[in-house]
Image 1 (cartoon, rainbow, N blue to C red):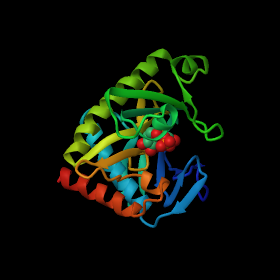
Image 2: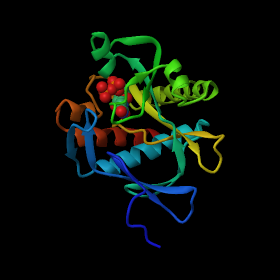
Image 3: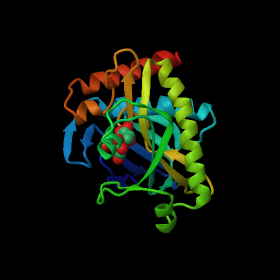
Image 4: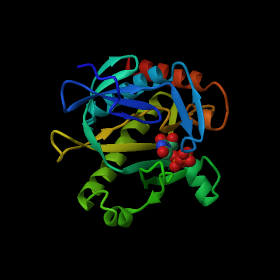
Length: 240
Ligand code: UDP
């Protein structure tokens, strides 16, 4: 049976069923959105760039013992992933002030934190992914205390690994967002899901401070895909 309809279509990706009920095909689209979908554009190579960068980063994380949903790359814009039930909590890690942290606090951009900040948001487009805390998560029954401790620990570990990795690529990992899911075939296992790409990470050139991520699109800085391509080339060069 050929499935003509995706199981799910989001802002940047589609999920397709496969013959295996525990496995999905995730397709990266060329659509770019910002400000909760208010700003939209298409970039010809975005799907390929984000898919390739995300796969390489997931490879780095897997090697360091972080479980992810990734099974294998299929082609430029498609990967095979374990089917998961996505936790409705987004985990954001910040190493320097930027984005909504600055909006909320009035602090200027680019101030390094003594320790990483971890924050949570409720994954709801309708509500604009509002900031929540441990108590909200408990009362909203989004995750158990044990799961939340696991998310925190994983996020810090990912930050450590990727902070070092991107530094070796000449990039500062300013902040990033992670999503986690429970494996459908074994719900006791929580793995990293979604993508890790310049769409969900702020990356600044270590020497020039130039923004190499989705802020180029958000703020109309131009050369959006050129920056993503540069990130890919540096990641590839580092991995040899
Ligand atoms: N982020 C994301 N998806 C979201 C919200 C944030 O990928 O729905 C990423 C964003 O790209 C940045 C980090 O998480 O790298 C922190 O984002 P922030 O809270 O500053 O939000 P912004 O106002 O930039 O969307």
